[in-house]
Amino acid sequence: MINGSDQFLLYLLLHLLGVFAFVNGTSSEDDLMKKTMESFSGYPNEPSTPSFLSVDVETLQVQIDELSSFSDTPAPSVTRILYTDKDVLARNYVKQIMTNSGLSVREDAVGNIFGRWQGYEAGLAPVSTGSHIDAIPYSGKYDGVVGVLGALEAINILKRSGFEPNRSIEVILFTSEEPTRFGIGCLGSRLLSGSEKLASTLMNTVDAHNISFLDAAKSAGYDMDSKQDISSVFLKKGTYSAFLELHIEQGPLLESEGVSIGIVTAIAAPASINVGFEGNGGHAGAVLMPNRNDAGLAAAELALEFEKHVLQSGSIDTVGTVGIMELHPGAINSIPSKSHLEIDTRDIDEERRNKVIEKLHESAIKIAQRRQVKLSEFKIVNQDPPALSEVSIISAMENAAMVSNLSYKFMISRAYHDSLFMSRVCPMAMIFIPCYKGYSHKPEEYASRDDMANGVKVLAITLAKLSRE
Ligand SMILES: [Zn+2]
Image 1 (cartoon, rainbow, N blue to C red):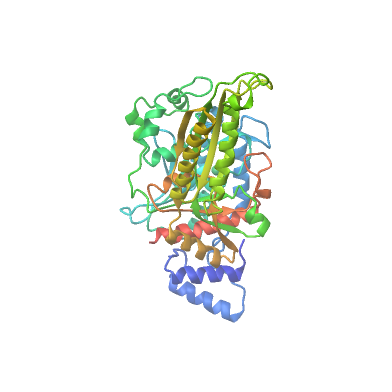
Image 2 (cartoon, protein in one colour):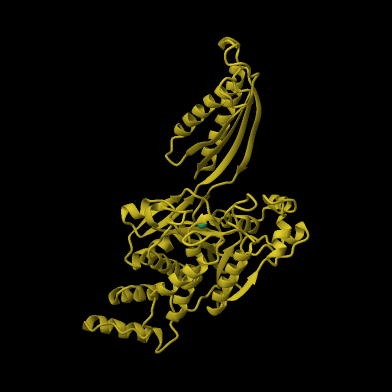
């Protein structure tokens, strides 16, 4: 909730920005005059729109709790996997809230859901916002959900305040942000961004139970037969004037620093690389050291070299992890004849990240030569480009935080989000709110009502501003 003087400041500022046109009561000029008089007279403000920009966070919390009950594991954990019965129920629940908010609802072929608040200039590209509601096994109820239900509440508070958008405002629920079922993260937004490669891949993709993507989609009510059906999802550039995503931070910084709002200036993107070495192996006692070509030591040396390349990038934003290192045959008395590494590196600067990958490749070749092993695999599995937020949206968010009297800081999203892919079709930025100890993807995930209300308010003011530009 915001207090009376904050309300007045907001009101005044948004009027000056020309953002708001109120429909109830007297003309906006008269309203402004009345409030100015009231404010100077020292009487408490009694705005003609009493709920002006006050977030109904109680209802938001009830909705978050209700949505979390569509889960395949018991509370407080949430498990909601793409195209399962619980996913379908959760989708219906969100569509119902969209309808109740007076939005027109449509779904695309893969089940991205769009709720539109029609602006009065139908020809202009809408402003969009949204997130996901799928949840990995035994996770929490806030990841993604705050960005969907919170966005709907942002629209509700603008409606309650009497605001009318110039551009339409659309809330998007993205299909399968989590890679749980088919191993593909941000499936819905990746397709919206026009990924031909993904459209082809999905024709032959199966889950761990050998159920095809197409059959799973059909069982959830999304009937696709061809690559054309899947590509019908692609958005043209310019479909939206902007995309914003409200999300819990999933890290500890905002909470530990006592800051209310994180304005995301860039989203780091991961690249993953698989590397394999092969040597002769042999008996741990019989083969003397000069005669060995140990695939395990080649892997170990590469891991350390990789760390050096990451540290030497010149930026704290470059990170690298060797998350998997397997040795074959894996016996104490056997020299490893094969090794397999899976390596993740991320950065907000694509060139810098790709340089790390290049150096990794050079090191792998050199190590293989020196150790007389074969570099049997060097495969870049994926290499998504990072994304920078749009400066004009960042400053709209900054203004929104300032007029709401909220502390804020600029930050980088080190996890990736649907926003990363939306940035390929339109200007993008994200709003982070604190979450308890930075926990995410586990049942302890939690965001306080105050923090959610703050995020929703900043989102609402930013949407209002962008819908008038
Ligand atoms: Zn998420």
